[in-house]
Image (cartoon, rainbow, N blue to C red; front, side, top):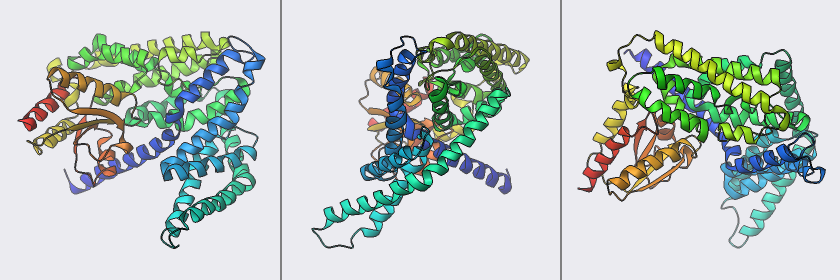
Length: 474
């Protein structure tokens, strides 16, 4: 491999890490508050005039929660990520200025203004640090925050709010034009490849959710929530692998299909496509089919189904959209199944060449083995399984590892978290190969072993880790 090729590969990895970090930052403002979004979605699905149990009195909750609570939560969380409690408070205050100065749902504005206000407060705090005598700390702290809050809130109310409103109107008009001209299904060309690069949360919560809420405020539902969260196409692809795949992929695909469809953890599907990238066309076809059916039959949900389970989609479906959502889900699953079946049938590689999922990426497997061998004999007391959001796939992987450790009678602490929140006292960090570069870059100053894997549910890769821990204990 030439130096030019190595440099290009490194540059591509660096770009992907930056995109993942930005996408995770956007989704990180929404995901901690998803339960509140789901609660609002249930209230909307049940009590609005077109809901399952129309009730004007209870339906009066919908608009205030959408207008005030949801943007304030996002603004606070975005600010908290940047500058802790003070940043969160400043983010919420700045978001309030946007809300009052606008006539639209300011979720997108909160994702901009919350972090910006916190960043400004952080810079002011750094500038003032150590410049006043002891005893004046509380006075300076409160009044500096008050003055910055005054400025940023007025700026949001008078200047920034109208600008963001115009931008959101422009984006909404573009989305509506796309839907009106039946072009939305073509978004699958971008969504399907982005999903397997772990940009699914960024697409779902950072882009589609804010635009979808704008549509809900007008029409009571939106199909934008189902662009990424509809698990039908990925389940169809996994079912095809279950019947017509080879080797370890065929054995593990049924479990992955169940987890993706019922549990809503879409990340279990990604390793299968990374192993055989041509299968992305199956998912692409499934997403296109689903979105077409949703558009033609009036599908959509009142909030983002998260996790993206089939049952979560049904719960958040308003009364008039049930048929469209059911047809769209199963049609997308069927088309993905058929396309994946054809692609797998055309694959002439012998079964013995179909490597196990954990070594589907040889460089990843080699890196993992090398990481363990280079640290032979090291005592492991705390293991962290990390993923993009710190909820779905990492929780599942941690559960698998805990069960194996329990059976091996090894007492080691195991926890799961998002990559940005890996604790400094972790001895071993397990994460997906697509995320390991990001994890290393964020925690390069910490003494921990990074173990890349390609599948959070496949058990054999954890056996190597258990053997490594046993050797360290002896």
